[in-house]
Length: 186
Image (cartoon, rainbow, N blue to C red; front, side):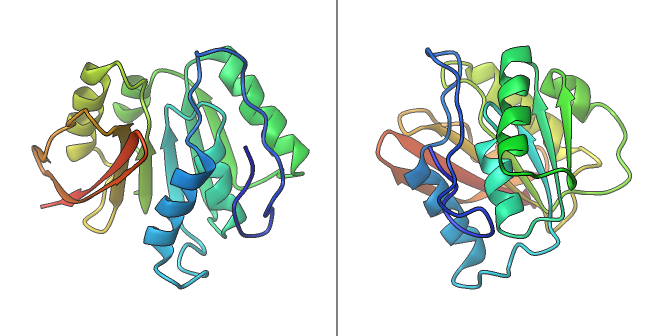
């Protein structure tokens, strides 16, 4: 696993052994960021991200590499939080991020002063309830503005849903066994 592009291009990232964490593949991350930048490498400059169910932190770190100003990593596993810290330290990233070791639902229930430009969520593929509850909570979250893009990574055979209260899926991409669903406020 490595950083695809930007300031930390080609630098390796650590993961956890076993099946507890399923990092977003390099290929899927490349597709995600190609869609978000649409040929403009500076498109993410200054953006704010929420990386929910962050795992290794690969998506949020990729965003930082490509110019994001701030990433909030949310992960409840202490072992995964340790890997996120190690990955950030290995790249000498010392600012522009916050790591919250917490359940995603608890973080989304807190009031926030600023909306994120991008919210990425990647719950365990076998936890359909986590997709529904997170997308429903996001639809009324103060972390969401009219221009926020919410991206859910999921198994291509799983359908997370077209709409969640105020969220509407506007794009779905499949790649290999994985898929990305993109949502915005209606």
